[in-house]
Image: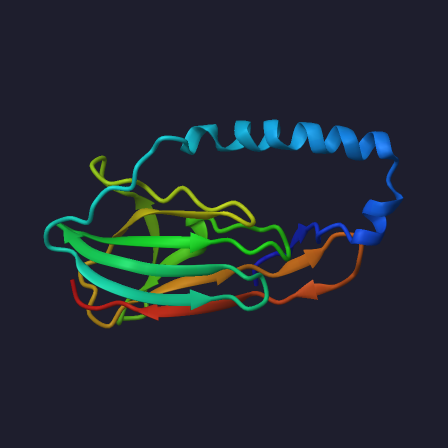
Length: 178
């Protein structure tokens, strides 16, 4: 079983109201600067168009607990790799985001294949931060897509400051042959 990872729940409004006014003012002034710095690496990067032979999918896996949503936009094959274009919207409930390491392919034979970096001509999926949307391509070294599923894996979570544990879960999207 995967180890539970601690997460921080959103700060309740009642606690925000108790913070000193100076701290609130400083947080409001610094927040846009911090967010801009965090997202500077993603600025200006345009999404790449699907390869010529890509198959449109448009199927979604939703984690109702975290609020994370992953949609398979297109699939394609490049030699021995299955290429999958996804868009992900990360929920805000537990602040976990969506990471490429949480997305796998389950083959028809039952093998779990982890993602590798997409080819250089495609925009890679680097993950989505809590409350944000991101998209891009992932590559999976798998011989065929027929009967395979893209799987969103959520590890078990432990809520910071409590003994509450949220069990891990998986959500799958069937992939068409590519």
